Image (cartoon, rainbow, N blue to C red; front, side):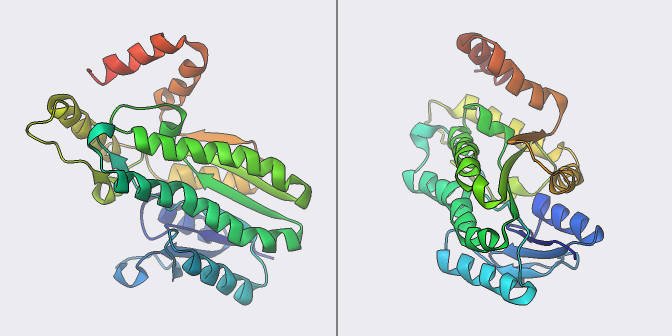
Length: 268
């Protein structure tokens, strides 16, 4: 029987690429979007209305999938938001929104699917995090924190649910060509800000990295490999060599030496 896959944030970008790729491979795909009616091109994916910050909508979608298919084999927790800015100047409510979407949201989706997976005695959850979650990046500190927190929660939940036959893993992408920049909250570059020059320059560089990023299908192919792996690893990374290598450098270099590399890279 074909595996049933639920993908949050599947209306565009990485989520859409994952959905279309897996659909071609014969999987039964349920994608989600906060506003499916506004999606002009879903590529033929079935999109259900889900806002990861709304627990009622999460429960409703999971119930729909189980009612229609009788099972749920794979959850890809992909929905998320970007956020940039000097932490001093970033509104607290925007930080809270980022955590609600990137951290608490995925946890609540996992909570909703776990009872069914436990009943089945099997299930796979793949949390889409970010290479940025492995380090505190200047002007992306809040985003790094949300993704880093999800990485750690995944480590804990893997152990908590292992006895039920459920597998949980992380996939951390680097920069890919998606529309994430258009939906990202970014603190304005204020004329009187002490960060005006450095933040303004970094913001342009971040946008360029996304525009010049890799093909999201690379992430989809990695998801396919994970689904077909009997015993998935705890952490996976996908992206340009230097982005993945930056994690290795952080692990082996003294803290201040690594910090100096970042400071020089961001011209701070």
